[in-house]
Length: 233
Ligand code: MN
Image (cartoon, rainbow, N blue to C red; front, side):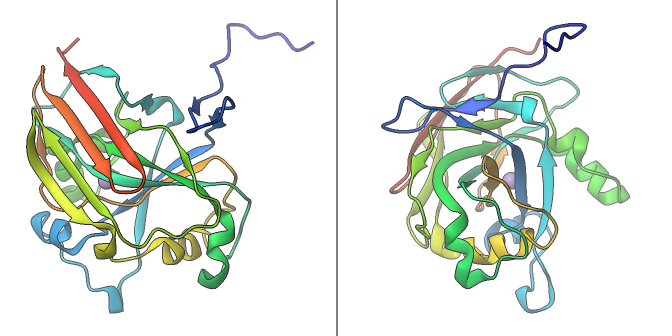
């Protein structure tokens, strides 16, 4: 029996709707600028004809379940919400063509890509990596996974409210790169594996939260997500 110097981390997993088994999570991928109106509000419009999607990743240890209260993170004065559809990969795939991409789909969830915006933009403007802005402890919030094997979600309202006030409202039909296109593109760079989660990008309306704020979001046909911001630690 293998023994370790200290207890290794638990398997990171999420509940699955209607099932006792939990989904073991493998990696967390995030798509940048995948709604035109959000790309514009960030000052970086997207020209799909001449650009490819881009990605960043977060540590598995940043994952928290919907319903949590998370501490306002250190070293920021601009902690922001980003409401996103999350795609759960359920089968391995590499260099997958878009017309076969649905075969990798296990299901979907609602997600929040919480961001230290001040640090992200400072890094972006200096040409530095985004990790301090994005790979924030407790910043990858995910609802229960809804199994929809092989189903391509192409439309449905996605919205977020802070303290009951709507701040983001869009539709999955406005994704610049849709689900099959994202699987095709990301699988050029990675051997996708069951348990990989892909946060598909946020629409316009992103903004800051403060300690005590309550976030509620939903994606039509997928479900709901909630997060409370606690005091700074
Ligand atoms: Mn995002």
